[in-house]
Amino acid sequence: MNRVESAFYNLVGIKPESEGIKWYSVAFFEVFAKFDWLFHRTIYEGTPLPSEGPALIVANHTSMWDIAEGYRMGQRSGRVVRTFTRASLLDPTAQESEAVKTRTGHKKDILNASPIFVKRLLAAILNGAEAISIMRGGSLKDLRDFKARGRESFARGMLTGIFILETREKSGKLVDPKPGAEILARDNPNIPIYPVGIAVKPYRASIGKPFTYNQMLESPEYGALARTNFTVLFCDRIADQLDPKNKQDWYEVRRPLALSRRKSP
Image (cartoon, rainbow, N blue to C red; front, side, top):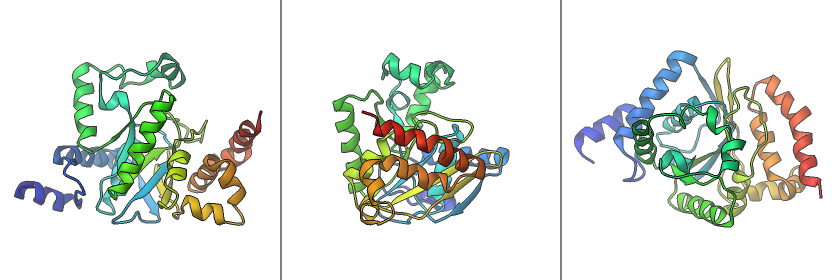
């Protein structure tokens, strides 16, 4: 790292934990976060993220601005968050299946309709922040690669982020949560997990108290749920950080549906 880069990182309050983190990616996210503040006045509250060591951040997904908010949450602890990101954003030549495209609203995603030079620029920025590729096909190979990349990130002591939702939900509701975070938690049972609720209008990012998979297994209150449906437990923790309307929607509407689906034969 040269003097200019060192001065830049000191200015923004970031300590790069890897040579893979590039100054231009940090600069992009710093500007992106400033625009988020300009447009939304996002409020940050709750438990500070750890200043060192591995941790998993799990959040709901409302918009592209969530990435700016994730950057700012990590920056407040002097770190860059490595986020699991769909493979097609890190490699414009990567192709997801038609089933995934239909399920996630591919045609409505502005990033998918961008010119190729924009896609390549975005890929360079995300790779410069050491985003972690995830292929959403659901094959056994995809699952093995996903788990291996999670273990690699934690073994390096990195702050790692993942969304509980497969695609963006503008309302802020916890709609159709996916098991990716649960898989990472089970595979890394002693890694601290920080649930994050992202709310809109007003914009707010609230970080809940950390827990581990093993701690939840041993909990008299949550042990049974942790063994059978940790994804629901994740959403409980995230919902507790949301606005009252979306918290109520989870507990009264979405949660019973999620539990009934898991219990179905």
